[in-house]
Image (cartoon, rainbow, N blue to C red; front, side, top):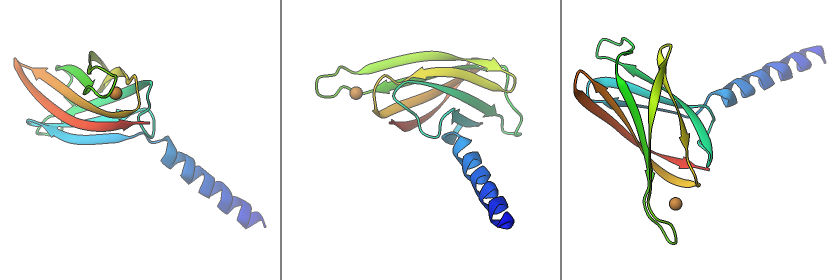
Length: 129
Ligand SMILES: [Cu+2]
């Protein structure tokens, strides 16, 4: 009986730890390795906090870039196209931003990294619930 309780506790801890990890997208933007981590397991149709990590070719965190996030949804029935842009602000090793995904559905995201006058972009799509 006692063993069973311990087993259940371990199982619940493992499940909650897995759930706590947010949705993450990792991709190249030019020479950079970019990771965008959402605070939630799945992006939602509301404010989503994201933390962006930019690594250079040597694997070092880049902290002197200008990082912007553009997010948009194309026009659809009864709804004009929506385009938003926000600056991600450096905090420690990450760039942080809040994305207001104003409706559920598919959003196109572009993370733009400008450094020494050159801009690299990383694009992906998220499905807001
Ligand atoms: Cu829409």
